[in-house]
Image 1 (cartoon, rainbow, N blue to C red):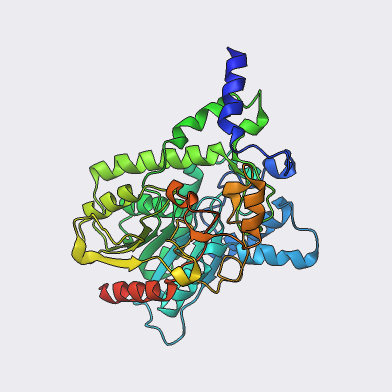
Image 2: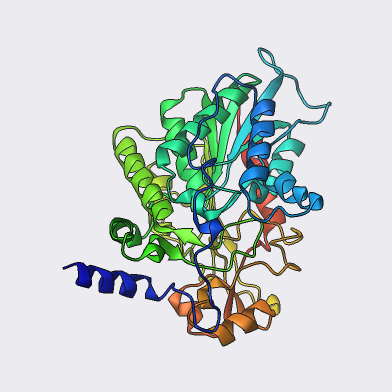
Amino acid sequence: MRYYLIIFCIFLTGCTGPSKKIPVSLSIRHHPSGQNSHFTVDRSISFETYVKQTRKMMLAARTDIIAKDDERIVNENAPFELTPPSDCPKGVKKIYRRGILLTHGLKGTPYSMRALGQFFQENCFKVMAILLPGHATRPGDLLDVTWEDWIKAEAFGTDALADEVDELYLSGYSAGGTISIYQSLSDPRVKGIFLFSPAIRISSLAMAAILPKVISWAVPRAQWSEFMLDEDRYQYESFPFNAITQIHFLTKKLKTALANQAVDIPTFMAISEDDATVSTPASIAFFDSASNPANRMVFYTAKGAFPPKKRSQIEIVQSVFPDQHIIGSAHTAIIVPPDDPHFGKEANPMACSRYFNIAPEKYARCRDKKEDFLGEITDENLRKGVIRRLMYNPNFDTLKLSLKRFIDSLH
């Protein structure tokens, strides 16, 4: 029996195991640092102190901090807060009128929320962005993390923001969206939520994620869904099954909570029809079930068709740009502007991982920006040629206009 378990594990991870042409082996980055798998922050400390403590932890736990100049990596990936301009309306009971807590997604860091943070700051929000446990240090820190740790971090950030603002809002990308919804259901202080590619439901792969964890004594690499070179300093490339398992547990918890309590606060959502990471139909069903008349959705589509019920609350945005070889949007694209220095139009991020272990030649073409198209890594798109996953939103300026109209509608 043990033999068959090992064979099954190798089969399961074979499509993500390293190619002979690009050798990768377990290293220190694939083991927990012991400092960032759980949320152990004292809930009574200020957000400023939390940021300082987190930065110190990141400096100690990351494996790519070599020279002093590399501390900029910590600066850009750490939690942050932004203060609204001085001419913005003041709060009545608190310092600021409005505030928003930003929560990044799996693999990511607060860096990915910077552009949104600056937008909300410009629109008179006090902004705080948290770091989810397990992130921004080393991929191995996701081996022991739990969804409860993420919820604790969200609760801390919500409490810290509530101390400073009259109106409290939450915003999350991908898994951060799931966490934001979950927090809003039990926290009457939350006046509205902004969701970007939220992980209302993920693929059935999460169910298979438990087996590699059980038999990792035999094949340590079986703990990893993706096993990469880890060259990107702003997101994880290697990715353990445990992280997928934890977000699956969280989505199940959210499903149960939503069955007992509908979301009735103003909700803004932006999603892609082609999303290959989370379920677009589940996001649409969530939006259809939400009851607030102020709700708005931005729906990126390459086909133009749209199935939900609340058509008057939907803005359909064409996501195809033939002159730029863009054949659609992607899960990774919505919250990043084209001029982002790392993930934007002129950058060359790790958007080619689909080919890393299975097609070295295509991987090289993609990394050299000689791909055929940019878009989502769907089966349909992959049949068209070499695809570099789109990491930025060509429609980011219009997204900001949609957000502004939604914000102006809030009372």
